[in-house]
Every structure is written in C-alpha cells, then in structure tokens.
Length: 411
Image (cartoon, helix red, strand yellow):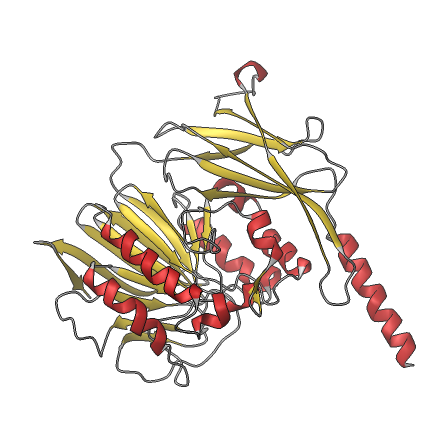
C-alpha cells in the first residue's frame, strides 16, 4: 500500500512537472524596471534547453499592422536553469533577458520575444511623457499561496482599476516554497499579460529563500537592478523614477538579518546610508519584506529598527512598505526619538493566507482577513495612498504633503 501511494505521488509530481515544462515557445514573459527608471526596461522569458539563442524585436507602437522594416532586434543574454526541488523531477530550462534602452518618454512600444522562428505575440508597454509630473504605481503585500485560484483576482482587479499604473511593486513572499517551479507557474498564470505589459519590481521575502539560499528562479527570471551591495544584487537595489527614489532592502537575507554583525546587515546599512545621502528626489520610499512595526501581536523586528530606522529618519524617508504579517497595519513610529521626521509605515497582504492583526499603539488603521492592493500616486509636493480590497472597495487612505521641507500627514 505504501509503495503504491509513493509511486502515485511520484507519478503525480512527474505529470505536474511535465505540464509546467518549458517548450520552444516563449513563456513567463515579464518586464522589470531598470535603475534608469523611465528610459529603459528589461524583458525576461523562458524556453526549453533546445533553444540556443533568444531575441527581442521591438518598435514604436504602430496604428495598424506591424511593419518588419521598423523593427529593431536585441540579442538576449541566455542562461541555463537546472536544479531539483525535493523529490520532484529536475527542472531544465533556459532563461533569456535583454534590456530595451533609450526609450522615448510618452511613447508606446510593442515587442515580441523568441528564437528567430518561434515568437510570442506582440506585447505593448508605455512610459509617461516627460512633462507628465504625476504617476501611480501599485503595491502588493505577500501573494504567497493559492496564487492562481485566489491571488489572481487581486492582481487582476488592481490592473482593472489602475490600468495606467507605471509599475507594480511586491513586498516579498511571491510564492510559498522557494524553488517550487509549479508555484512560479501559478504566479505567472495569475498575472498573465499584465506582467508583460506593466513593469514589475519585487523585494524577496523569507519564503523566497530556502534557509540562506535565494530561490534559483529569482535572478534567472527577473532582471532587477544590480546597484546593491556585492552578493545582494537584484534583491537590494534602488531605482529613480521621475521624482521618486524607491529602495529595496533585503530583510530576508541571512536568516532574516538575525545576525546583527553579519555581512548582510552591515553591508546594507552602509549602502543605505550612501543611497539616502546621495539623492535629490523629492520622495523616498523604502520597501522591505519584514516590517519595522508588526501588526501581529507576537512579532517584533527590533534589530531592523535598531540598524535602519536612524537612517530612515535622518534622511527623511517618507513611506516604508512591507509584508510578512498577512494582515494590514498603517501608522507611525510610537517609540522614535526623532520627532522632526516620522515616515508612515504600511504592512499589507494580497494573498489569501491570513493572520490576525493585534492591538498595537503604532497603528492608526488595521485590518484582518482582508486581501488588499494599494494605489500610490505621486505628484510634485503630494503623495496619495489608497488601499483597496480584493473586490475594489476603498479600505484606507491618506495623503502626504511637502511643506517647507517637511512631510505632513493628512489623514
């Protein structure tokens, strides 16, 4: 009986792996923002290992049929992804990526990816005009579980309500078990063409790591900025997008930064000091998976506050966006020694895994058992924040304004 059950399990895993297997046709196509912000975009996709080279063809979006003479071609960087997760069949795929550069503000572009014979459909994206001062982006807490069946409705509702979103930002735990290819398949199926038409940004969570090892999919299938500390490229980084500097701190590295003297903590503290001290951006937002202040009663990330909060307050970070606690909390520091600048801290969740939010004095607004997406709109001197439920209803909102060099909260 046990032998039969084991064989059935192995057979089931094999069939699921085969259904998720790469082919000669490109799939898992995704756009990522680059450090350059609004004049370039990175494209990544997957094929099977028989594909030797990858190409991206692109041009300005035409009014009618695509004319081949207007097409530019970029040769992709290609790497082979081979690994085994648990007792499942080994994963064999090739990941391709390239960067489309010198994009004109206010223009729409179409692109397709392939091997010279097998191509994807033509996909489209656009960047805001140079004189367009205001823009919006979407922020999501942990997707993590039931990605295709339940998280899909959140990311699709967000796109439906905010189709003009400049990019989408994820505060970690994109999947539940690092390295499990089937979960990545669900994540991509949930977002479908959204991921290939709206640039994506993500910071890793603890579930994107297996102990201290980053999921091998991460750097293979995403093309994120490499301007962070050595060893934390594409997990710790920053981008400048119009008048915003957006910074990712990898709080899931090194056993969730438990080792205060470890290189993951120390290198990021020194790096953050430099990145915050060398920007003229009007708005500064930091994202990190572990929250500085937790909505969950039993959790507290004191070492995160000890090492990073002095810099956040010194340099005037406006907003800190996190996940991890599978509930909603929004407020300001209740224990800060710096009364001059208090960033707003937000913790949110987009997937169906839920924890109860406790009663903590830092929270102005809290929520339990609610899936959310957040729309953040940035304009000169003003930032609007809206949290919406899975069915699109407004759950929370506030506004930040710049007045005489200080940030004021209008609640």
